[in-house]
Length: 499
Figure (tube, rainbow, N blue to C red):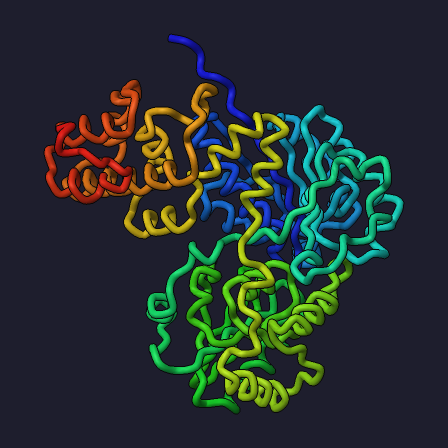
């Protein structure tokens, strides 16, 4: 038996303390990396190395995590800062050396938060820096600038493009490194197609179908001011009793859950899936939550929080100026309640819709990253299978995403890895994805496992056309409904004759 090929090893390094942004962005990108490599049948190993206390978010998405303590818990643990830095640097170097990744992904902190990464970035990997915008004074620091030279690809998450602004200050990237920079738009954990509709989301959150509903968030929840701010927000909610409020305190929140008759709290880990339940959001100015809300067309009342690297004030001000909501200058409960009434009264006209961010750029990021190791044309072909709406619907039906993507590739009977194939387009692959979903759902509903369906499809892989695959599969299961209705989605114009 021939030896199995070594997997493509991807290591993600996410430093987090107060929030979850760095970890969340890397998870968003890795979801797309896994989808692409599944379609291309490239064995892949994706692991996370993180200091985030919200590391269970990676496990929820099926990614293994190696965890180190965050700086936030140092005081409670009694670990001396000098000793912590020494342990961290050695532990991270040893872990990365043992994992021996082909691709190393780092978000926002190019040298790490303790200057622990330069030695790791010199291990012979292809290094990718996810460059979320930071304050210019931070980006110009010599240590920040010098660390960028250790990366083969710098993915600049360009928020300015959403506002029609010119490219960010080129001086923020050293001139010799500018050919390594690729600018894309914001990366989101979920696109709008991967979220529940309003009625379903309200049912999941326990909200009445016909009331006004407001989402309350202060970010990841790890900052010390979160408890006091949430107290004020709940007091504001008391002043608007006809409106329902839901607090998403964040995975890192450890404070008190303030109570009010019209306020509920949720610990749902991927709350963005339910954002369409809300008419309005009161939110801090963090990258992830702000762009998720804008993408899902939820008007915002912005309460930006002070951060050392992230300029939440600037982001919130630009979003408000673009019509995505209002920037609150006064933060008393009375002022917040009045702003809620005013914005709800205009029936969402304060929102510019998702014109600021029509789509997530997570798949774009994944293609750029994998192109360091895989031919770009193969990746672009494979991306036609990544239909988030179909994949999300299949997940709700209990169909494993991996099974669905593999079945779709097999149904085409000509995978995207075939260099002689020139006629596969997005429509063909979407049809294959739909057909695969119906085929797997059919087998599962009749007591079969999706693995059994994949085994049958694997035997049919040599057949030359989708039509032949469909007909052979139908002879196997002899299901007239699947034959005439479901597999018609692969454009089988004369299926009856073929049979």
